[in-house]
Image (cartoon, rainbow, N blue to C red; front, side):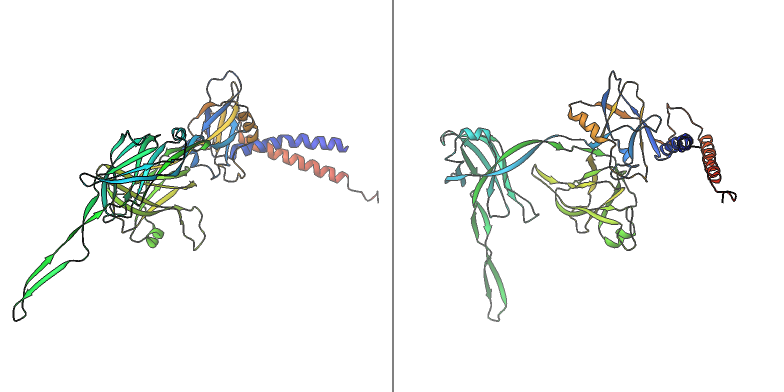
Length: 474
């Protein structure tokens, strides 16, 4: 038997076996699948599928075990996996100087100051960069003032743009201070501020005490004298700000994610590390998160909290809960004024469980989880008329990067081809969903594979025996 014949024989025998191995790998590598639902196509297109939240619970952190295949579950389809992005406006704030032209005391103990923006600047530039607001810089604490804002182009004719903006400091009660005044776009050069009260009453730090006693030294009366002093409202300087806007194509809009609170969240480790703190533990199905929002009915509070994430694999002696982020949550609702920051932001994370730890001495006790948000991922892949495609996922042994032949799809996107929208049918476990490919009896295929292997090995043994030298040859 020549080498060419033997090689052909081996290839002829092994070809079905290799094909069977590939088919078996395709059948067994992924535990879940779902049909891709395409719109009616009249030509080849690129399709876009937004990855739904249930898929994240079944995939690796980098989504490397997510694939698109034809309905035979064998032929892979090239696809690109990336964040959903859109254009966003980046707003930066730039401080501008306001020069004091004069200050005067008006009737009713009111204070008025006149300010100028850029005496040497061309007025035409103000229309391109309007003033967005002013900041009152004062060293005083515990005050509240109403300020009238007027503008003028010639320092003679004035137009009121804010009737009574409120600035205040409530340091005696909480760590809050508001000295900024937002303005409609101001293109005029001059700004005039009128403060409703130039003075406020203040008790002296010292007091006068008079006493009287009889001959025996018995104290009869105590007379106390309190003196009130006027405290002037002092302005150190006033600055303004303008905004610069830049549009970039890298925004990742955050979408709301489903979450569920854990009824009995405190485990042994949390109890040991935070014995007196309050905790809010929740699950988000391993969906990518970047922000959580807290709600509360409290009117004035500030709470320092930290967000923990549970690790799936822990070595002996290590903590299972790691700190993911820390934040200062605060809310100020004061006479119609509302300023709050109730969000905890962090780098994109995919975990099963999270825990928000609130210290025992927190000023408010009704903090609750309002929402969880994270970015979307999209898969872009080619499709044609009559194609039947499916998504398969969950293969722990699959490693590598997300996507398959992604550069080819990206090249098509760069040519300006807009993808059509695709959706995903229900996820089915163990490949039990409907398939349009031929039905294969896997038990028969396995038996045939065993027979083929036996034939190949037997042929190899026969060839080896024939080539062994005999005693007569010796």
